[in-house]
Every structure is written in C-alpha cells, then in structure tokens.
Image 1 (tube, rainbow, N blue to C red):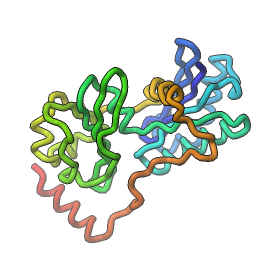
Image 2 (cartoon, rainbow, N blue to C red):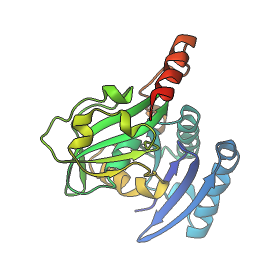
Image 3 (cartoon, one colour):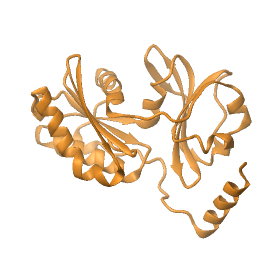
Image 4 (cartoon, one colour):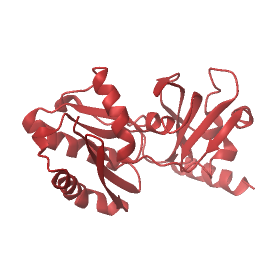
Length: 235
C-alpha cells in the first residue's frame, strides 16, 4: 500500500511516504519554514519512491490538536494533493499518535497547548490498537481528569516537562512510566493510517478538517496576570 503522511503541527514538521516496506521522509524545522517547504518535501519523497500522487492509496495528515496554523497547513496540502484524483484522506489525532508510542495498558497522552494549558486524552492500548477512553480535551494541568481505570498507567507527553508538576498528584503518583518530551513525526502516522483505512475510516478530501479542540487562541489581560502569578509561584 502506497501511503503519504504530512505532519506540521509542531516545530519540526515532516512528510513520509511508504511504498511496500520502504519509508522515505523529510523533516523541516522551524515554524516559519513549514508553508514554504512542505510541498517541495512531498514532491521529493514521491520522486525518490518513483511514485505519482495518483498512485497513492491515501494521504494521512496530522489533524491535531496542535498549533492551529500547522494543522490548517497539513489539511490544506493534503486536500490540494487529493482533490484532483479524489484520493481518500485519513486524519490522525496527535494524542492518538502519542499513545501509540507506548506499550500495552492505560495511557494518558498530553501535549502543551500554550496559554498555561494542555491537551489530554486517556487511551487503552492493546494489540497495536488505541481505544479512546475519554474525548480529547484542553484544560489547565490541574484540571486533567483522573483516569477511568485503576493504576498503574503510562504517561506520554509532548512539550510537557514544565507543566508536569501541575498535574493532579493522583495522576503523577499512579504513573508507571513517564515520557514528557515525545514528538510526533509523519512516519508515526503511517501505521495508524493503514489501520484506519482497513477499518473504513478514511474521508473524501472535501470532508477532512483539523481537530482544534480549543477555539480560544488568546488570553485576556486578567488571565495573563494569573498565569504569570502561577509561574512565579512554581519552585
């Protein structure tokens, strides 16, 4: 199966192409470079794999939650490539992709959402599947919901080192393993996209959309002051 994946929600963007057992990829570092270089990177991996866009089975993209501009970019590029041939698109959630990097059992996936908040979702991982136990949400770290299962569990986060001490003590105490600096790359989307295709979860390109989770992108002056006070109070 020929699959292309695009991930641009973080500082290090990437594209990956799988043909058979071989994967080609390109990584792009720096937010300002993403829009300028994603499409050339896509064409580069297609050329290396000796494939045309029309020979792809589907295109996966990192749907979020994550940086709004990056999510819109990945979706737009995927749609632009897919529309001429009506190729199916496979949106992949970033928290699901993080959870997929862990072992078996209950997993809390986290990502820094800026503004003193984090994205979060609980999963049950088994046999290479990531079953969501809660919907993806965004909140202050102190308000991350307690697990819907008994301890121990695993925690995997992206950019979560500064926020980890603010999570509820019950969550931190019950964690068997903790990784706070994980990343999601386009390569990580490929196995999730293959499974989604097998389960019939692909979309026509005109129906695909980013998964923002949060619709607020700025803090009020009062919220900014409260955030500064919390940071000053941290050890």
